[in-house]
Structure formats: structure tokens, C-alpha cells
Image (cartoon, rainbow, N blue to C red):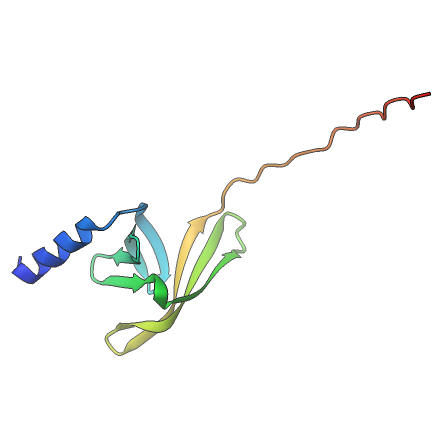
Length: 116
């Protein structure tokens, strides 16, 4: 491993590592990535490509339902698109499972008798 990579890895290790998600299905750019979230950026690590996305580069986030009612699409819109060769990706679209929904019913209580 070149010395430059070792220094970069040490600097990244010193940052506070927040959540890490393994084997996330990313639809754009296509592939499965490990997503590591840090204080100021997130890292997408795939088998072929790695991307570093600064949070200051994120323009908006959308959580959209998919037609199968089991998955949701998390769309991250970027101010400066990711580049993979000559292809530009202005959005990162991740597929996530829909969280279980809880339903609550209002019990029918009788009103207390009026005070006299």
C-alpha cells in the first residue's frame, strides 16, 4: 500500500465513525456498496469504485415509496455530481426496506356522566 493511502486511511480513522451499513443496494450508480458515515462526509465503498460524498455537496434528500410496498428509494441529490469516467451521476439512489408500520386504534370510551 502506498504511503499516501496509509495516511489518508489514518486520517479517516481519526474522524468519528458514525453508522456503517454493509451491502447496501445502490441503484444509481449501480452496485452494492458499504456505506460509512463520518462527521463531514460519507464513503461509498464498492467492489470496483469508491466515492466520498461531502455533506456540504448534498442539495436535498428524498425518501420515495416504491410500487412493491416493501422497499423505499432514498434519493440523495448532489450539487456537484459524482463522476465515473465520462458518466456524471447527479443523484445517488439507494434501495432501503420500508420500516414496519404500527397502527393504533382509538378505543371507544363512553363519556363520563355529567357532574351535577
